[in-house]
Image 1: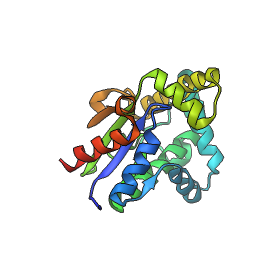
Image 2 (image 1 turned 45 degrees about the horizontal axis):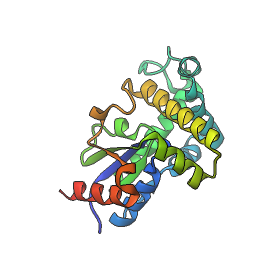
Image 3 (image 1 turned 90 degrees about the horizontal axis):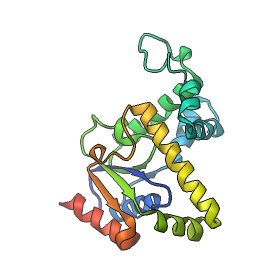
Length: 204
């Protein structure tokens, strides 16, 4: 079943947002982009994939991330690309890839501020997948094979990283429900029910 919408998915760690995205892509028979964004951006920019991954990891500490990003250069259209920090260049490379994927047609794009990057693009539906902490810990243990203390640590670390990364690049608050068209708790009915609910929402 093919549709003509571009769906962006922001998600809490352990909420199953990536799995939801993959199932939606299979249902609608459209491309699914997550790590593919980094791969494409690396090939086009000349930076390594590791550089992109490390840029995202820096966001765990918002203050250090702001310093690393070189705030004085970011967003100044009068400055050339070469005057931007490396992290700025990495983000712009990802932005270019995300916009190109969207221009190619219907697709699912996970994370990386895609909802903000595509805010002026028509036919975009922005989703936020969340869940209570207990179910996220359980999922991290069952799916990722983590011990409970590590699962709890990762939930805090990755959510903070995503929040800082999103806030810095967009000036908006990650997880603010007003940024999304639909926010849904995956723990209430499970992944399959979440997917079915989103499909009905899109079709409506």
